[in-house]
Image 1 (cartoon, rainbow, N blue to C red):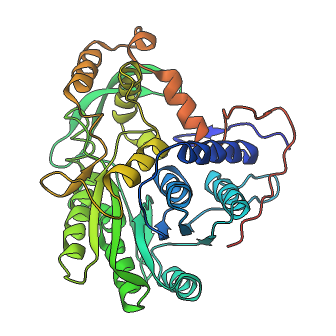
Image 2 (image 1 turned 120 degrees about the horizontal axis):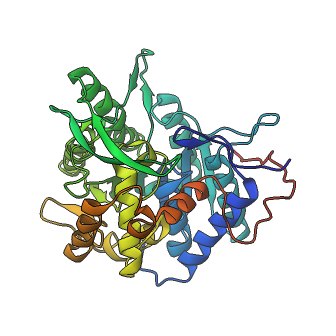
Image 3 (image 1 turned 90 degrees about the vertical axis):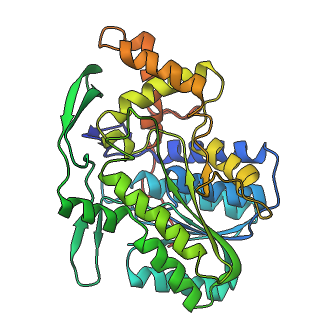
Amino acid sequence: MIVKPKVRGFICTTAHPEGCKALVKSEIDYVKSQNHAEGFKKVLVVGASMGYGLASRITAAYSFGAATLGVIFDKPANGARTASAGWYNTAAFEEFAHADGLYAKTVNGDAYSKEIKDKVIEIIKNDLGKVDLVVYSLAAPRRTMADSTVYSSVLKTVGEPYTNKTIDLKNNTVSDITVEPATEEEIQATIKVMGGEDWQDWITALKEADAIEENAVTVAYSYIGPEITHPMYADGSIGKAKDHLFETAKAITNADDGIKAYISVNKALVTQSSAAIPIVPLYISILYKVMKEQGVHEGCIEQMCRLFNAKLTKNSVETDEPCRIRMDDWEMEEKVQSAVDTLWSEITTENLDSHADLNGYHEDFYKLFGFGAEGVDYESDVDIDVKVDC
């Protein structure tokens, strides 16, 4: 069938298998072209099919020659419905990795569940013995507990309503929006979903099964951003969850068993999650313009390649005083933020084209789902039924 993008709300409901494959190949080619540090060799990536998780898996495999085991929660094609983008990304990565003689296996299912943890541990014990790096890159809207209780995360402020500029991406108009605060129940639910509890559960399960090296490293991803976004992110409901994630990192490290846990504070990028946060897409589109003009823009693969080859290597880790890895260092430079602030204060619907990189924002959004890749004929029929061995 001929696959075209169909956008509903903040997601695209279709994905292009050949486009996803081409974009995965371009990320692999990028990593191959870079200098490589001494790195990890047996890597588990929880949340491995898109964004930073996928980029982490590609970097580990092609910087270090690592064996990678990925955990995803994606859907195969069903009739005329395409598979999810993460499914096609995973299929492409495994095809390339196997062709290059690299170990790559994937488990598809609910990463929060004991069932999936047990399945992953069984594979590690049988195939790898122990892992030396665990990447926790899970971004989920809800979590189902063992007793069937369901917690859903919310993207709201905490304490007071917040009003600022936002963009309607359907018609590219700038307007003010007021976001109401989360209830205490919503905050706690968001912490359950996006905090560190499940990350801790993964590390505990791996340790109890003797499936993780004594000197292993684990990393989870977060974001802080500038004051413009703080009420919606760093100080909002999602920020409370990320605070819990940071405290979990300290708890894992302080367990005195040799395992070190870190939070990597990454750059703002277009993701399925960020597209849904009021105010943030407008900030990202301005940030893209500024960072591209200053020659310091990075996407997911550039960020993860720099992380694992410069800041979180086998032999050294570069952190700030609270012991966070700052991959947002280029974003938060004064010259970048000063330029963003100026454009933010001036931006209106009428001057969007000159004050923001909307084309770049939309291009990155569609690429999440395999659209806009170079060399792909989007007018041709493609087979949407792609297999993943999981």
